[in-house]
Length: 195
Ligand SMILES: [Zn+2]
Ligand SMILES: [Zn+2]
Image (tube, protein in one colour):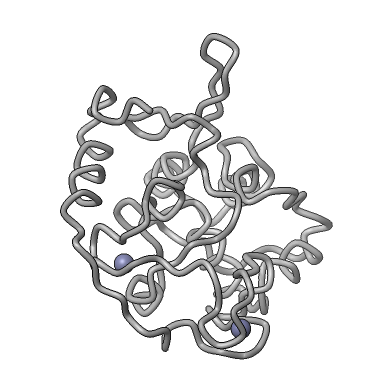
């Protein structure tokens, strides 16, 4: 693959997956499956593994000569480190460790977040059912064809059936708990997040 012409700079608390999506889209790829093919295989064996620090996508982004030190530091922070504690795997984010079993294996999206073109990191965790920014219940399946969202074949946030997921009906819910968890995540309150 020729060099990428655009390397995304992470937004505040943007998820690694969101960064990967933006990188693929802005470089002209239809979806992550096409991006992976062009890169010679990104080993997207699982949603969780695609997002780890030191993984192939992280390495591609940070090795590009376009990336300056400040952008590289931000990219590094978006990809959690895999750490082992007493024989268990955890994802180490900026200030918080999350047990690997709490990382989603299927995609969940906030329809409002995708209207802004990027996803907040909290969608990564199975304990987040409501977006802490917009108060919407995250969607895990297409409202049109009812199929589970296919994270490798989202084409500019369109389902494979062509439904634009930005048009998903909004289901607002009480987001107070979700916001508290997000605050604990941001402040590094590990005790609050012990699970
Ligand atoms: Zn949202
Ligand atoms: Zn669909």
